[in-house]
Image 1 (cartoon, rainbow, N blue to C red):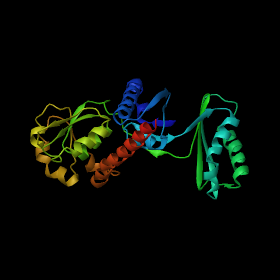
Image 2 (cartoon, one colour; image 1 turned 120 degrees about the vertical axis):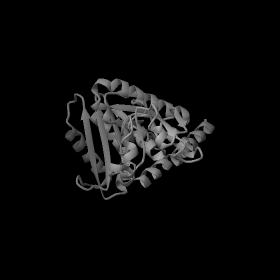
Image 3 (cartoon, helix red, strand yellow; image 1 turned 90 degrees about the vertical axis):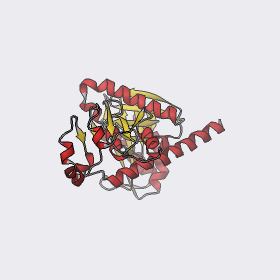
Length: 297
């Protein structure tokens, strides 16, 4: 079982269901294109995906825009004894460390609090592992999410890139692969300018994966020509100096020109290029795992 968490969708209350539908559709599309067999289940604020090879698939799904994080988890009932016995799966991991902590989140109506769960499970794990509890700086952590009649126990979380699901916004023009990544992160479908991007289709194929295999078009427009096009917006990877140098041209624009690198503090051009390329190795790992499973069957 994989827990899939999403964040920004909750800010769009009127469009929440539409955005969730698109996110689920994108998950289905990635699974289908990459040979991942599984089943999706939806609940308020969470998406669950049942599959084999949970860890590598959870990591892959963390690369889907709109996803805040994923965790390969074990599902059990919300009974305290069941939660505790499930948490014992991580007993050997606890024993390999000096200290541990139990982190609990709970939603719904139960006869216990989150603190009750942490104390009960923590006491049992401490007794069976002979390791100390350290809530401030533990060497190992067991996480428990209790949601109504079910609970999910896990020890690992893959941080996603957030943003909005691709397809929730309109189709825009991206002048190169780096700006295309930012456009996809904002939920836009994209057309890529082949005048300003890589000469082969390597970047295009990478972007298709980041776009959850939605259509990524190619157009032959340079920047001046793009400013005369009918796209609702253009994304380009100008830094602040390049933005100032092109001020005269930009004054004649008739649509928004978005330059995320000019003010971006988290993602530099080099960092985005590395992130862009990292998805190919991850997809290859997914393919290898899934093909091996199919041969075994």
